[in-house]
Image (cartoon, rainbow, N blue to C red; front, side):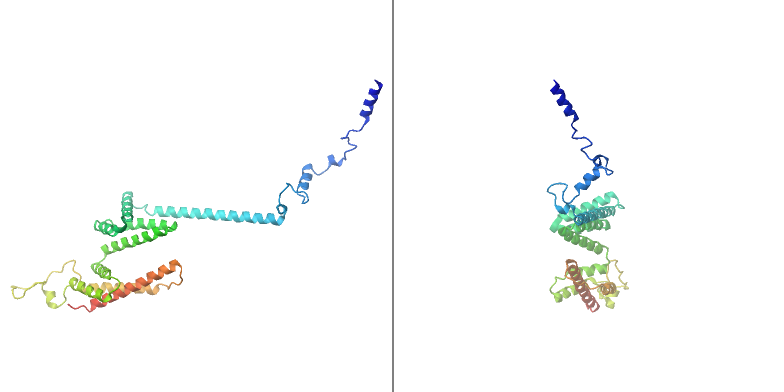
Amino acid sequence: MEASVFRLTCLASLPSPFSPALVPASRFYSKRPLGAAVLTRCISKEEPLLEGMPKEYYDDEWQAQQREKSKELERLRQQEDEEEERKIAEYREIGLRLKGYPEEDVRKARRLVSSFIMAAEEVEEKIEEAAEKGELDELVLMVIWNRLDLARRDDEKEAIRSLDLLYRRVEMEILRREATPAMRLLNDLLNMHDGFDDEGWLKECKKCMINTFPREDPFSILVPAGFDIDKHQGSLQPPLEADDVLLRVDFLREVDSLLQEVRQEQSEAHNVEGFDPESVASMLKQHEKQRTIRQVESLLDLAINLKW
């Protein structure tokens, strides 16, 4: 019994492992908080935060590069958003072009344009048929232009080529229907050219002019065609000029005016240099215009020197 009491007394007198005598007071009364000490220990280069992390992760230069990459990605994302907003605005603008037209007329024009696109090889007949019915107008051209504009923005090359040809063909048909008799004759004469035989083409054009223009000798001006002076009795009455008669002088005046206007535009146009697709296409158009101008000049000389 005495031994047990002695042992307990001895144990009670031993210092505790957590006694203030064994633990420095600085561990409990440091002015710096414990979190700061842990953070300082974590960012030490000798003891990484996580095992396996690359050393450059704690390098200031590497972190600066990562921040620059993040800024670049943010800039690219902002550019993409701006480009998307621009496209949406353009599509909205295209859709608003037809807002001022009646809805029923817009639906009819769209159905007509769709029929042109579906006609394939028969598109020429469809366009001429629509022109005879009076269905070709500015609204039809606007619908085709909207489709062409959308195809250009979506970079659909086949659709761009087809719609561009359709637009020019419909525009030409509208201009032909609204043109004066002189311009219609000029268009018909130009279309007679097969692209090869210039001499044969001019001969055919001369025959067409002789059949179109009334004879200009004094006798033909005073009396109608087929007049027989030997059988005629009474006074002579000059023939009344019909509304659809095209005089050679009117043809000469309008064609010469057209040539002067076209030459002025050609002189103001800048020469295009380069071999990119747009430059080549522009150059080919210029060559086509020059060829047409030379043909019109030949027709004007033929009409000036025309003899029956």
